[in-house]
Image 1 (cartoon, rainbow, N blue to C red):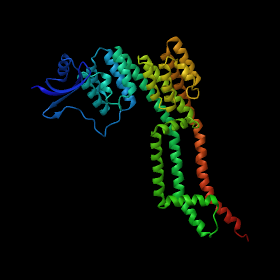
Image 2 (spheres, helix red, strand yellow; image 1 turned 90 degrees about the vertical axis):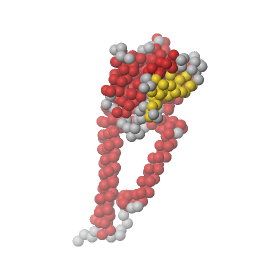
Image 3 (cartoon, rainbow, N blue to C red; image 1 turned 135 degrees about the vertical axis):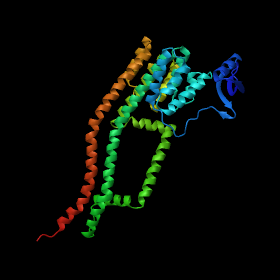
Image 4 (cartoon, helix red, strand yellow; image 1 turned 135 degrees about the horizontal axis):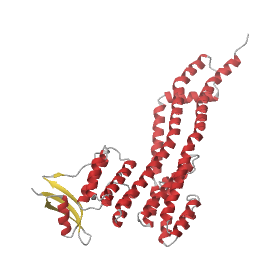
Length: 410
């Protein structure tokens, strides 16, 4: 019994055409449509009103960058071995452990089977295959080097995943210690300060020292209905900050401020440069144009300052200028080391190789910075903990000292 298929195609003039056709399978329908002079975009089986389209659950397992990188490497190996793309995608969908990634790969296989290009099929799932991934896959399909480009994509994404893990590990330690300090501070205010307050009341109504009054006032605020107001205000400030950061001007100011942070500012700057240089190198080596590569590299840097320099460079290069020239005009954002390496790369025709060296250099710098952060932050955090706990304890004992001074001696 023949099945009914809904299709979307483009005719020779590029016009989108939709319709319904009967056939035995999606590949046969796609072949039939090509013979009619159409370019298939989407083919969906419809029988008795039931769609074969696979739905991705709303609450589904998140696909990690590392998992996509591993999948890309496996796909490259299978294609290099001579396995057809459709068959490779089917095998890959069965092998991956992540259920959502398996569903997405199955969807991609069905689209490719229906005549879609691989990059277009993957482009429907930007949360799994980002713009960088799809752009490089497109370049690989056009140049006929899809297996090599997929290997390059896997390398790039693995480097990005490792970089993200390093930054996360650098941030995790101080966050955990600061949370512990906060919990200790709250415990002192909730359980210890009220005991001292009763003691002060039993000693008489003498005026308490200013530090003691401040600590007691904070304790009162936490233990009173004002706590709810404080929580609402804090949540409101956080939401307002997130909204401000999502705006164009807010994101630019925040990214500018981040690079000025003590200790972490330098690390974040090096991370942005690593992403910028590594992404630009990968795109250029895959055959993507310099203009499109600059767009992608700016976005991949995850910093508006670097992205702004990339847009400036794009316009300058479009007019026939050298990339090194415009990068050199922004030494505070793009260091001279990067500019000099780019200049050598442009002169020797090995820009992608030079950019990869820049990426490797700053990746090593990120490693060194992360390794030294623990030794730098540990004494700082210990001092902060000592100051917080010591302030509360001293504030509680100040009235006791005053009381002892005024006790008559026999």
